[in-house]
Every structure is written in structure tokens, then in C-alpha cells.
Image (cartoon, rainbow, N blue to C red; front, side, top):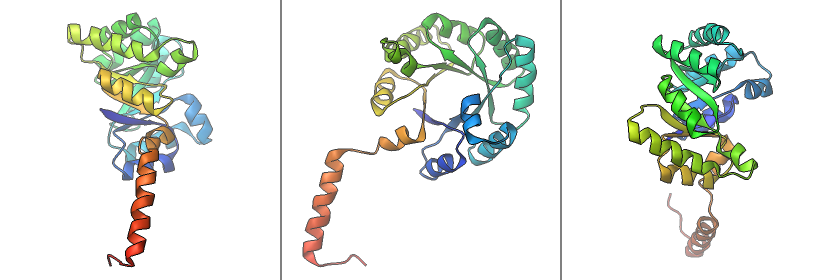
Length: 217
């Protein structure tokens, strides 16, 4: 499974990248706004730091403008993935950009039917938002399972990019199902290393070692 980090915070991306935990990055207008910086500058800096796919989202609502914006964003770096919404215009833009050789991430997916359309439109990635479905008292993980089954049935090459990841359990569950990629905030990815028994075991080891009065170096 590939790990994308969902942020526009350069320091946070660099920190995880140094751990070898970043295969790509997803951004959106809201994350860019939080950075308080120019979108092109932020995206370019991320692309220079991370060699994998970096999603940069269009803001237009009609297909022609999405295509124009997408081509502009794609010029920032060779690893840009143009991010478009799962609307009919977004799907039209996806097909045009994909046919032009650009990676495309179709975002805001909330149903298997939408995921089928994205695959047929040539999407590189489909981004089902599982956390937002959970907020509506629906099981977002079930959506990943449905898409996985459908894509496997027909050999669709679109990668399932599980998004709106809220916790470690989300990551574990979609990994068991076979999601190709997860994108999560830095804090969630880091929290995967945490376990109470690990902390207790390390505390005991340190206490026992201190009793020996020895040093390794």
C-alpha cells in the first residue's frame, strides 16, 4: 500500500519523507489556504521534495475551465496529478486530461456508481471519502470494499486512493480490503507507530538496563 500525506505543510511532509513514509502528497484548496502561501509556490516546493504523485486541484466548475486549469497545474512539475471533482464536467475533464497524458485524481467520491464512471473516464486515482460517510452514520470502509470488488471484476486500472482518513483503524481496514493508496494527515500516519504495550515494554527494558550500570558506548 502506498502512503500519501494529506497536507500542504512542507515541514510535515519533509519530516515523514525522511522516515521513508511518503509515496505521494494530496492537496486541495482548503489545505493551500491554511498554508497562507501562493498555490504554485507550495505545489512546486512539494514536487521538488517528493518524487511521487502530488495532487493539485482545479477550482473551476465547468469542463473547459477545469481542463485549462489542469494543464496549467501540470506544467508546474512532471509528478503533478490533476485533481478534479466527481461531477459530469469533472469526468469530462478527466477524460481529456488523461488522454493528454496527465495523471488525474477524481475526488469527492461517495458511491460505487461514481467510482465506475471515474474508471471509465480514465482516472489514475479515485478518492472515496470514507470519513465523511462515517459522519453521516454510513460505513465508509464498505465503499472501499465495493469499489475494490467492482474494479477487480473488470480489470479497471484506476487506483483506489482511500481519502478522508480519520484514524489508524481506517488505515488498517482499507489495507485489509486492498486499497491501493491511503492519504491521511501527518498526525494519523505517525500515530500508527503508537501502542501502549510498546511504551510499557520500552519502559521495562530501560529500567532493567539501568540496573546493570552498563553503557553500550
